[in-house]
Image 1: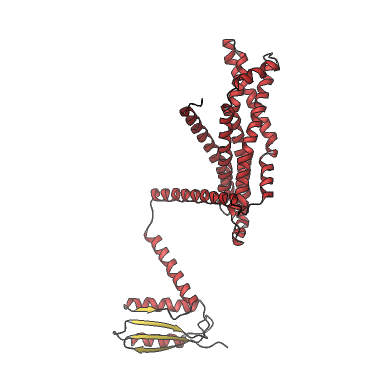
Image 2: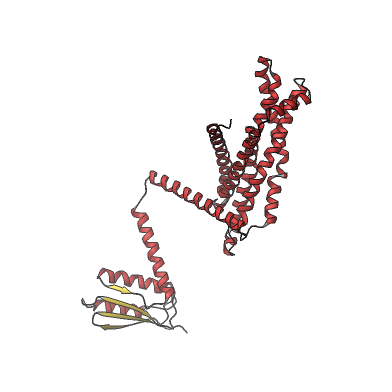
Amino acid sequence: MQKAKDLRFTNQEGEVECILHGDWVMSVESKTAMSKWNKFWRNLSESTNHFRLNLDRDSKWDSSLLVFIFQAENELENRGISMDLSLLPRKVQNFIKFAKYRKKQEKNQEIFVPSDSLEFWKSNWDAISNVSTFWGKWLIALVRMALGHSFMRFGDFLLACRACGASALPIVTLIAFLTGLTLAFVGSVQLEKFNATIYVADLVSLAMVREMGALMVAIVMAGRTGASFAAELGSMKIREEIDSLRTFGIPVIDFIVLPRTLALFIMTPLLTLYADVVGIIGGLTVGTQVMDFSSLHFFEQTQSALTNMWEIYSGLIKSLSFGLIIGLVGCYKGLFTGRDSASLGRSVTSSVVVSITLIVVFDALFEICFSFLGYR
C-alpha cells in the first residue's frame, strides 16, 4: 500500500529542516505536499539562512523526488538560502550530483562555441593522446610478457605467425619475383650502353637485399595483414567483444594486440630474406633467358656484390621496424574504430594509408642515418 506524500517542517533559530514522508513516486498524488510547500514558502522568514532536507527511512522514491528537490533548491537559491542534502540517501545525493554535472556541461557547451581552429587542435590533441596511450600500454604489455605475467596466449601467437608468414608466401613470391625481373630489365637498358650488362646481377642483388625486398614486403603486408588486423579488431569492437574482454578484466593489449604485433615483428624479416632470394632469382631469369648469361656467372657476380654483410643487415633492420609499424597501426586503427560499418571501412583504409606512409618515411630516415654513419 503506497503512502501519500507529506512534508513536515521544523524551525530552530533560522535553520529549517524539512522531512519528506510517504512514497515520493510518480503514481502518488502530491497535492497535499505541494500545498504545504507553498504555505511554507509564503510564510518563510527572512532570518532563515539554512535549509536541511531529509527523507523518511521507509519512503519509496523515483525521479519525482529528484524533480521536487531541484525545484526547491532553485527557489531557495533565488532567496539566497543554501540547501543541505547530506541527510538524504546516498543514491539520491549521487543522482543530484550527476544531474548538476550534466547541466553544467550543457551550459558550458552552449556558452563556449569553439572555432574551427580550436576544433582542429582539439581533434589533433585527442589523436596524439590516443596514440601515446596505446603505445604506452603496448610497452607495458611487453614488459609484463618479459616478466611472465602476460595474458597473451602462445597459441594465438602461433596462429598470427602462420597468418603473417606462411599464408603470405604466394603473394610475396609473386611480387618479389616480378620486382627482380623489372629491376633486371630496367638496369640492362642503361648498362647495355656501356657494355656492362653483367653488372645487372650486382644491381638486382644490392637493390633487393638493401631496399626493394624489405620495402615491397612491407607494402604487401600493410595491404594484406595490416588491413586484416584493422578489420578484425574493428569488427570485434562493433560486436562489443572488446568491451566483454574489459568486463572480464582481461587486458585487450595483452590478449589481442601483443600476439599480432610480435608475429609481424618476427615474420617480416623472414619474409624479407625470402623475398631477397626470390628477387635475385627473378633477375637470374632475365640474365639467363634474355642476356644469355650462365647461371654460374650470374651467381658469382652476385656473390662478389654481397661480400659486405651490412648490405643484408640494413634491409633486415628496416624490415623489423616496418613489421612493428604495420602491426601497431593496424591494431590501433581497429581498436579506435567507430560503432558502425562505415567507420570500420574508414579504419581499414586509414590503416593501409598510414602504414605505407610511415614505411616510406622511416625508409628514408634509415637511409639518411646510414649515410651519416658511413654505412653506404
